[in-house]
Length: 334
Image 1 (cartoon, rainbow, N blue to C red):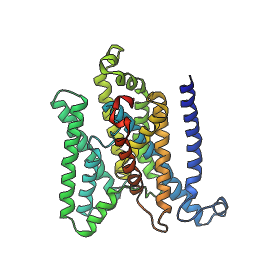
Image 2: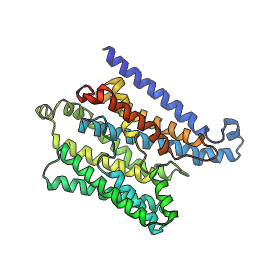
Image 3: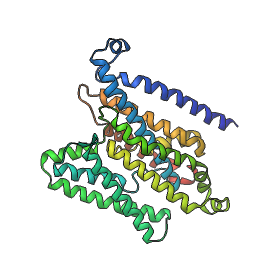
Image 4: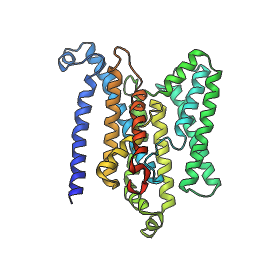
């Protein structure tokens, strides 16, 4: 009972924190915007409503989606180090974006940059290869999917290095900059691009939280409780991959959010996904918004890619997991 109350209190605190961050973050940046300056209708109002607010909302959606997908991967692979990029989606998207950059194609279609289309196509190609390999093996086992994801990730990473080596200095810099990830948005188009994918994905994952709890107890036990394990895993793998593809195509490969947020929540409130899912979603969204806010302020008037901030925090966090008893004894994690 006390554990349940602690989990609910933590979730309520997260909701309050989320509301506070979403209300305050748009006013922070290289220059502080005040409600007074907005009410006067000067340039501050334009910056707030066309740049800052869309950027904060985009960051929250991306962070929430990555964290939720990371929670699913950590549960399915029973590994606290699993990330949403485990199946090679990030490498495929990076290769697709790099091809568009090197080809010199610029501009947008329906106000969506061609780089995003290239990233989405690359991510879809990685997904197709992973699942084609799984179907070829006639199994959806964790080991098969994991090995296929690692192999595809290495394949696209090597192709990315090949493309970058052949590109000129300007294109090479653009590729490196895209690989750092970023939330440099203008207007609400990126939000409307991600929402039709991320929101249904969240709903699908939310409907499978009980099945995730049962799968964690053991696939055989889950089957005796009426869970179609193979079908559930297939739905979750495809859903998370599509969500991650959409986010990466919009924001680039922002690392470590999907690993840190769900793992931190699990250490605090345990592995019951009915509470862990909403908590990871909120923590991931708030975490990425805070990191992006810091990225906009730390070297002002210039901006640092948010992926640099998350990697600076994620590296030590990754090492800490490896050095703790939790990482050495995975059975205690869950």
